[in-house]
Each structure stands twice: as C-alpha cells, then as structure tokens.
Amino acid sequence: MFRTTRRLFLAAGSVLAIALAASPGAAQDTLTLAWSPAPQMPQIDVALAEDLFAKAGLDVSVVTFASGREAFEALTGGQADLATMAELPAVTGALRDQRFAIVADLARYRGSRVIAKASSGIAAPADLAGRRIGVTLGTNTDFLLGKILGAAGVTAEIVNAAPADLVPALLRGDVDAIVPFPNAYPAAARALGEDYREIRSDLYEPHFVLAASPAALDGKSEAVTRFLDAVVEADGSVAADPDAAAEAVVATVQGNIDAAAVRALWQDTEIGARLDDRLLDLMAEQGAWIVGRGVVKADAPSRDSLRPFLEPAPLAAVAPDAVRLPRP
Image 1 (cartoon, rainbow, N blue to C red):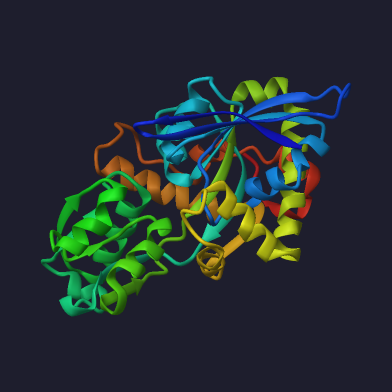
Image 2: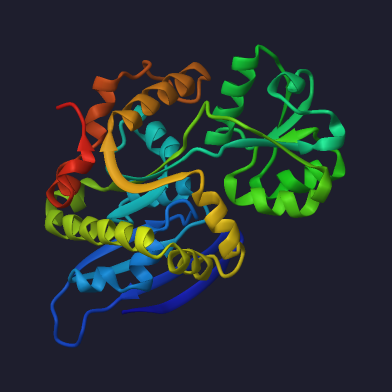
C-alpha cells in the first residue's frame, strides 16, 4: 500500500512525498525516487495505485518534481536513488560527465506538434517562415522546433517563454505559434476552440527514461532490479486495463488532465520498458545539438561515448527480451 506522508506547495511547483510501507513486520529495501510525472509514462502511477513496489518488498519514497530536469538534479545531487525524465537532461548530464546511468526507457512519444491559430494561416512547417514562435529554450521542444525549421528550410523568430506562459502568449497574439510540452495540448485545444490548428511532426520522438545513481547501482542493485520488475508488471496492467491506468494518471495530476485526454496521448505513445539503439542514437544526435549551441563545452558525443551511461543489467534480469544494446 502507499500513503501520502506530506505535501509541500512551493513556488516552483508542488512536491509530494509518498512512502510505500511494507506489511507489519516485513523487512523492505528502501529507495528514493525523484519523479516527474508524465501521462505518457504511466508505469509509476500504476505501480503506486496497485501497490506493486510494496509487493516487491520495496519501501519507496517518491518526491515529485515539476520537471525532469529538477528530478535529474536531485539524482545527481545525491538526493535520490532513481529519477524519471525525458532523455534530454540525461544527455546534458552525460556531456558534463555526471555520474548516473539510464536503466530503462519507459515510453516513446510520437505525437509531437506545433500549435497555432487556424486564422493565422499556418498550416505546414513552411508557413512558419518569419513567424514568431514561442518555445522554452534548452528543452526537448526547442530541439524539436530546430528540427522542424531545418527540415522545412526556413527561419523564424524564436521567443523564449516558460511552459505555463506559452498558451496564454498564443491567445494574446504575442506569438504566431508555439511548441509546448504535450501536457499543454488539451488546454490549447480547449482555449482556441475552432481556431485550433496543429502541425504534427515525426522528426523527434521523446523518450521517457528511468535513471539510477551509482550508489543505488552499487549498493542497492537487487532493489533496483525489483523496482524494474514492478515497472514491467505495471506495463502489463496498462495493456490489460488502460482505463484503470488512465484513472491512475488522473489521480496523480489531481485532475489537471482528464482520462480521455490521457488515452488520446497514448494513441501516439509506445508504452513499455526497454533499452535499445533508438535511445542511444537519439542521445548522440541531441548531444551534438547541445554542443553545437555552446550549452556545454565538450566534444560532440558518439554512440560509443554515451553507451556507458546506459546500464541494462537490472532490466535484462527481469525482461531480457526488452534489451537490445551493443556492449560498451
């Protein structure tokens, strides 16, 4: 079972601490998870709702962060054993030679999009030429926008804005289009109504990953493996009862997205723990992008230089068919 032990509301977002307790008298291994919830990555939500971590003999303390970058900072700062995020913070961490390893790629999202007003005349990537486009710089949506503009052979005026400010900026007319995070798509559609226009792109597929600290991999390796066993079991629960899984996600985000919107996102999501070359290829591409922008002073990475930041052993122990990686 799990119980909420405390709830803190901070300026940067809410922090929710959850403890998963064992049955009375049962000894459990402890893990701390820095969690950035995302509807496309429902395994943690389902594992909590179904008590799968406790059933695996784990006492998991979950601290929720507003972004994957913050969760990753908690991991590399020694405040957590595990962390969830999209892949970009991990790529940046690898370029900085921070100590961590990705142990699972939980989900891949294929529904990335640019959002505009239909009345703006923007209907295709080429129509973005010379327009003001809102995006949060340094994030994977910034990476996506660069790929879209590059593929279309056009340039635009990029306007940096916080995630929560993008939809209001579009409504006010401060920008002509936005590239928000997927959890903002439903809000944008509701706000714009019949004036809603989206341009979908398959140029970038965000990956939602689980990373572990060296301390956890060295001193709690068995616990990490059992954590992943619970995640793989949650994969089965999502496939068997997607409606219940969607409700678990809704409960996590306290109604900020409804179950229908969650299921709509899942139509473009490949859910299931794995580790393979697709993630490694994307990380190498993003690493070159980060270096090229001067964000991190380093040599452009390769698959070989990034491979040590993926540790397949825990996942291979519980789902061997889910791992397809070259040896480091």
